[in-house]
Length: 347
Ligand code: SF4
Image (cartoon, rainbow, N blue to C red; front, side, top):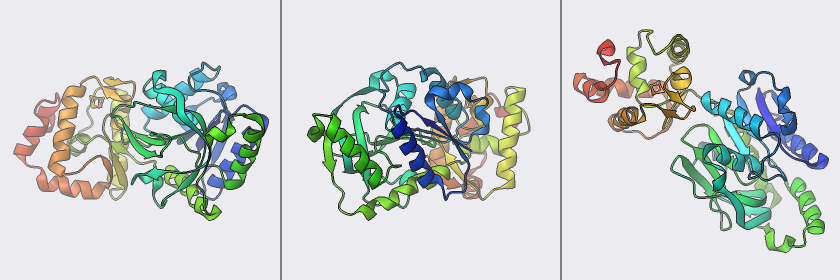
């Protein structure tokens, strides 16, 4: 079940966004629930949701709004549990507020309203999309992000039109993948009447309306991004796992992950930089993204990536296991794992 937080303020925009989500998710055979940001107190259990989408808004991500606390908590829950998040426009900026700080959100150097051609990278969120034109409507933007943010989209007016966070299924898009031509035309007419500076922001790079039909794929790709996340050295830990760990909850969680991988060895998994599904209930897990022993475990992760000759990304688990079998010998094992407190148990 996807949780969609609608942060829009005006009745008409709220309904337009809900309609747009119905159009984008309607044929993906997944349940979803749309909740207004102001009503987030009504959410009784975040565990029942598999994905989170955060909408745009006329509000500013720099402001303190009554829903900030609940929205921040929901984001942290999804990050801790490595469940996919897609933040759109305001949602994209709010994600940066939570992950990097409000000082990374500013008034845009060049705001945009209209249809913009966006330069995209080869990223799973954009699978199947070529040379896209998206609806844009923003006066603010994010900037100066650290290496945890992989910038995956930009245009001449905005250098961060899209990011992926730490190779996790966590994305922000400054542009609006959800809106269709007719949705944007309505907004353009409204802004034309209301905003005396409209011409300053207006952009129209759309040649053919059919160009925008492919944008729907972003939602399909997002829905399909719910893979097991593993930091590289945990590939080694899983092979030697004998049901011991840092706490009862940790063991229970690791049992579930290991069982799942055993039962479905051909599944696609996500190799990530930083904390993964196994870290979820670890007492050394700091805020869902860092480990108390980061210095040590990052070295182990780096060595595993080097031995396997891979980068963070998506792989078939069975293919990685085969590669691991090829390289794993006593010397390699010692080189990677000798500083780990569980070394003697696995050796
Ligand atoms: S010790 Fe660190 S890397 Fe290992 S499971 Fe805990 S949080 Fe994750």
